[in-house]
Amino acid sequence: MHRIHTFATLPLLLLVAGKVFATDELVSITTTVSYVSGTTIYLSAGRDAGLERGDSVHIYTQGRYRGITVIYAVSASSSATRPPDSSLQAATGDSAVVVKLRPTIAPSSLLATRREKGSEKTSATRTLVHGRIAAQLAASRSEEGGWDLLQPSILMRVDVSGMLQSDLTLSFFGRTARDFSHRAYPGSQGTTVRLYDLSLRYGSPQGWFGIGIGRMTSRNVGGLGAFDGGELSVRAGRFTVGLIGGGQPDYRTSSVDPDRRKFAGYINYRFSEEGWSRNDVTLAYGRQYFHGNLDRDFLYLQTSLSPAPRLYLYQSTEVDLHDLADGESTQELHVTNTFLTLSWMPTEWLSTSAGYDAARPIVLLESMKAIADTLLDRDLQQGMRASASVRLPLRITASMTGGLRLRTDGARQAHSFGGGIRAADLGGTGVTAGVQFLRTRALYSEGNDLTVTIETWVERWITASLRYNRYAYVLTGRQEGAVATTLSIATSVRMAGSWFALANLDRVWDPGRTGYRMLGELSYHF
Picture 1 (cartoon, rainbow, N blue to C red):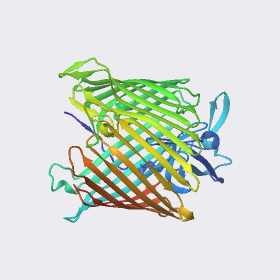
Picture 2 (cartoon, helix red, strand yellow):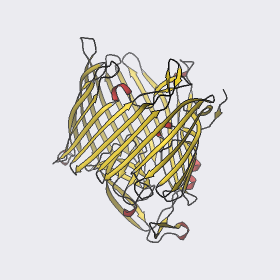
Picture 3 (cartoon, rainbow, N blue to C red):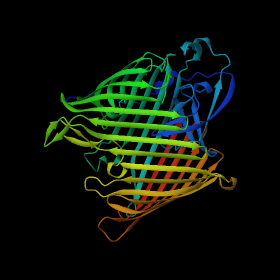
Picture 4 (tube, rainbow, N blue to C red):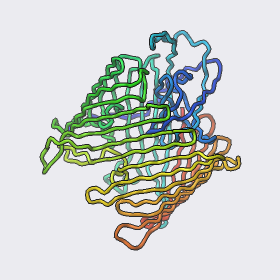
């Protein structure tokens, strides 16, 4: 098998593009989080309020600083942000503050005139660089032995938009790690490099076409996953038609495997006239090949709809067109993955959501594999779910959650239900405390899960938290029970400028493993 290797380096030269700063008034734009979905945080303000792609957004939960995120898409009245990592936990109704320099007279070399909705508007195209560089170190220790160093790593995420004063965007996300266990385990690698994203895209919501090349994923065909290749789209009014083609990435070696190829075509329709909108629907058809033979073909349907300012619906479904029966390929339709989420905030103090998650095994005809196209545990997570959050006086929030998985394929019914209460800034001390209880009945166990959290915030530059979790459970078919307990201490410090440091220490008491876990990180956000 021939492989084409892609070398992943840390492209510090990307920073040469720099940032173009205005020289006039400093303004503060305050808005709210309208919805949170996966790795995207949506804001209830957009271009009309002065927001732009690349603006840094500071998130606050009831006055407590949560973290920073960056706007990557803007419409007239809303915008979307993508946090630099998954540690930022935002919720509907949180405050979002953008502090930026607003030029009173923009340099003439940066002005571009565009026609929108029949009128002339002037906008400045700036080269914006944002991202994160972090050094991480993890270690563990059992009660019987000393500390074991676990894969120290360096990760880097960089996005450069407005390159060459145009709608050209460069994205990079990579990680390199050192595995010290390779001497004890000959099959393991010493130093590994992972390249997750290295793509160059051109296009804007107002343009008539878009193009992208590199290692990437497509928003319009989520079921296709990552690919090494290109995507071409053509827009006409509210319709967008696109084609995708490339090879299957190998994240373990950061190489391209030409024996595994992917192709897809899609059509997207926007319900809104705005160039970027969450009100759209996509229908796609995808094919995967292994050694030139059909490995999988499927339909993909995705809908994002916001019929009202506080109502949001998201749905995605994959339908495989072939299946395996007794080792033979058959033309049989079957749903593989379906996700549905409905969020509604009827008032400022009440947030609700309901959904359905179903991950089914995806059968690859030539590779002879059956995998679930999801990071979720398909046995425990699929099913119906619902939650509600109520904001009470004195900065107190009460929440309720529940889930149900019906009996299927001989497996028993599983469910979970519980609730919690959280009080922020107790007595003006900056201390936040919360407790949550969850009763679970999974496929192979059932028990009670209790979590107590205490957090404090000092002058917006240092946070510390203490978390206690106790899970008492009984395995199916056994009489005796077991208890797993974890005590966690975490702190995050914002140092000079945009430097951050965090440390997390866990003490674990578990029937299977007892000991310590530690994670440290030093990062720079730009």
